[in-house]
Image (cartoon, rainbow, N blue to C red; front, side):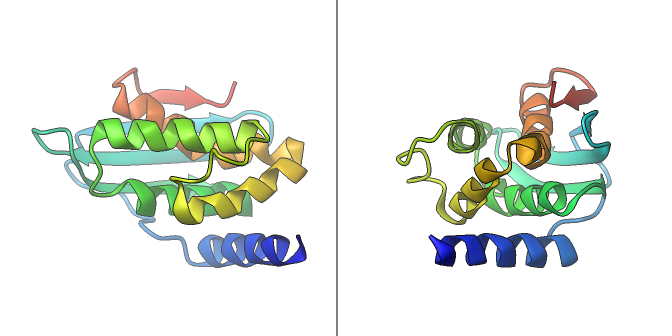
Amino acid sequence: MPDLRDLYQEVIFDHNKRPRNFRAIEGATRTVEGYNPLCGDKLTVYLLLDDDGVIRDVSFQGTGCAISVASASLMTESVKGKTAAEAEALFNGFHDLIMNERTDAGTQLGKLTVLSGVREYPARVKCATLAWHTLHTALRDEGATATTE
């Protein structure tokens, strides 16, 4: 398992140092703030949905630990161009992968599977899921704030 651990560290380092889609979206159709009270990570997810429910653009801004930023960066890459339903399915699959030790949960997740390594650090699971919970709240149009609680 050393190869997966090395890949996990490389991906976290790369996406933390150079996060993708780290910007605000002017005219976003949904904007939700996320907060992890356990460690203080804060971010905002911006969605631009078209009339058919396709995510035309997605981005984030905020501050947090390397895992939180990397997970948000990977998330934005993964859901851009997907329908809201497809993004919800990714949320469910990712959440299952991180929260449970199911090996089949990552089959449809592609490069997101590398984040399964966060399970080795239970205190960091909320860091990895913050952006995803925030996206989930935005997709369901459930308000302007999301938490990992």
